[in-house]
Image 1: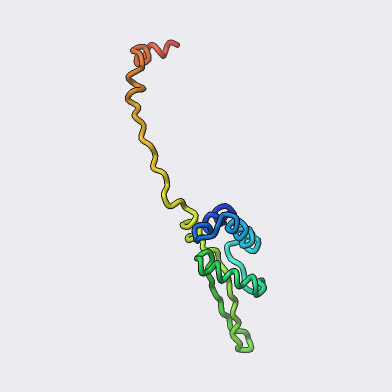
Image 2: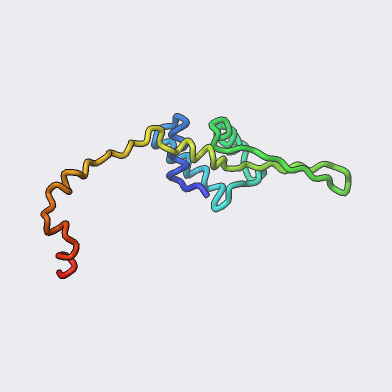
Length: 124
């Protein structure tokens, strides 16, 4: 499950500003709840238009099931699916800071002989 912060970060990765991305993430997650897919027919036309925009940005993708009814008619069910791989990719920092290497040799130079003697510290 994608959280709102990750989705907001991903939307920012597609070019949205921070405030717009936060608003869009909240809007989008209201439909999905704890699921990663929803059925298309719950959307109103203006909502569906927004989902098409999300699809263009790579945030969601579509899928379709078909089944044949006993009358011979084909019934199609369309789904919207959160594209979790793309969302995580977009939300990841592009340039993660490299860890700084520390020179610990000076720390050991300042230790007394008493600190190096394990038998002396065992009696403490």
